[in-house]
Length: 276
Image (cartoon, rainbow, N blue to C red; front, side):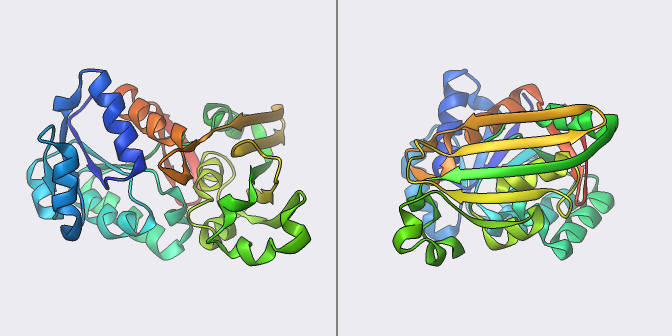
């Protein structure tokens, strides 16, 4: 594991720190970056186990080899390009932020100018390695379906569509490109963006969002076909007990990416490449 830093101190970072601490690797965590108004709270939670900083300048001075963004689209937009331009690799959990063409171009330029590379963990899904292989073998069609209980869509544009009888039955309330899903549902469609970047890209990958009152947890389904054959993969990834919009598996995928290098680099329009 290379020395690294984290952005954000929410549910993902809490679970990630537990993994790192359990593995006896906490000394590799150089710092956690939080907003100035959160620094005292974060320091109390850290309890001296690792450094808390509230500015990007402080973080960069520590010279981490890679920084894992664990704080949402806003944090990725605020800090990602500067880190890449400074030659520091970034592990992006808020993959849907790349659906914004302007921001994706900014990231690409920062990476080209500064040498930092953008890496993407598998997140709350499996089968990314199969999509990367299928892409080179001949991939024609990819659909990602996300099925969650109605309450999981509260606070999103889907909430106003899931009223009355629609909330009591299985309802597919969105179908569109991965780019459209990531733009309209930034807290819920990061997995769809990850699938798209490993496969056909944000505009060619289809995403379906489904509300199902019988769902026991967030169910993700990847369906792909092409010259390689047909792939169907289902994963029921339980939500974090601290944040119902975040899968518990997300933090562990970041841990594996930091520790084992199991992640992939991708351009804004797909064309993923696995690496360490």
